[in-house]
Image (cartoon, rainbow, N blue to C red):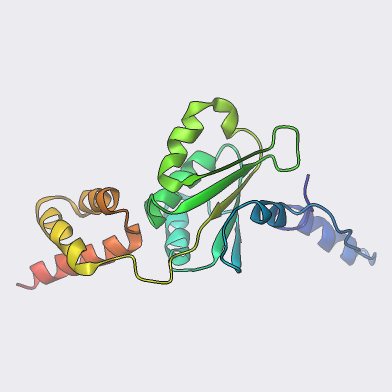
Length: 199
């Protein structure tokens, strides 16, 4: 079921055994990270291991915002009862067009590996309740090397929305239409709001 001790309670066991003066010796075996990366299809040579994101909404959103500009493939672990919220938060924070691989129950009887975009994840899970069961490794492609956000194009849509709607709604609509990352849209929306206030 994977090598324990990486982003799981196995780390506490290792500490306890060492404190007792006993040796801890690794035995090479299945690793969920390496297993998932090997079938991801992503060509970026580096990856950033995230482990589990925070469970609280605000802390999770901040963590995702910090990950958004990284060009490395993001590797996350998630439990079945939180996977829907995490996928929604990832789509919200990174944009619905980012490619993702959902790896479920790796090396086990009900193993499932599916490539899709973050925006397609909700429908994929809704199609079959069994898809929400088991332990998950989520791989998300890194940010592209070039800047996805065309500020002039973004402004044509965002400026009128910011002036007519609450900020949160303006950002959500712009993200849905353009597919640009939420943190980039939100930052630009705050700039527009500030400019309007100073006039």
